[in-house]
Length: 187
Image 1 (tube, rainbow, N blue to C red):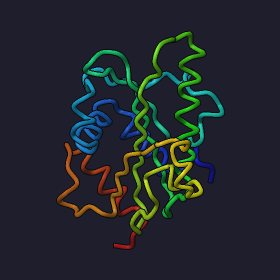
Image 2 (tube, one colour):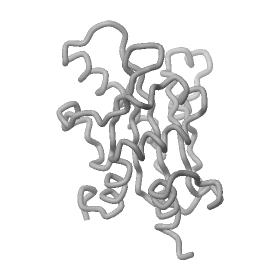
Image 3 (spheres, one colour):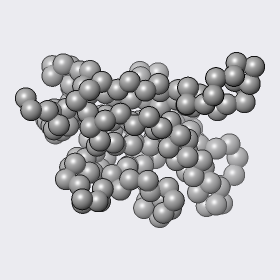
Image 4 (cartoon, rainbow, N blue to C red):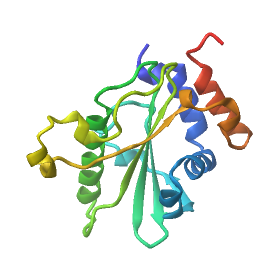
């Protein structure tokens, strides 16, 4: 079954493709400081034309744009991995996404400072996520050269680490999170 036809991908896109659900999810699950920097009333799905074929690693990925409260535009990238195992090179994939998003932004005629890209990984495998969220940890450890390695981090929501009563949200979001949490379990 291709990723495009995966019922998990379709489910995720049907739920988190709704701007109001995505906004509620991001408001609740991003760190407070990050959430307060964004104007959630302006959250909108990025147009498909923004995503080039090289950028579309997985059809279930969703890209949103949202204005910064301080002015300007930021990009919130929500990446959904429906695998039941941990992806060891997710940091590299997300760095590639960031670079391509910035290239598309520049190719669209924009100038000035690049927009912020906040990668968010929603993980719902049965086992806990055990990969560092720091891209630098995927690169050879050479302390004297560490300054030359991109300091990229992503926000992880590991549903396996939440008790059911900790998963919050309105009915649609709450139900979706519980469904994702238990989809690969025999409970």
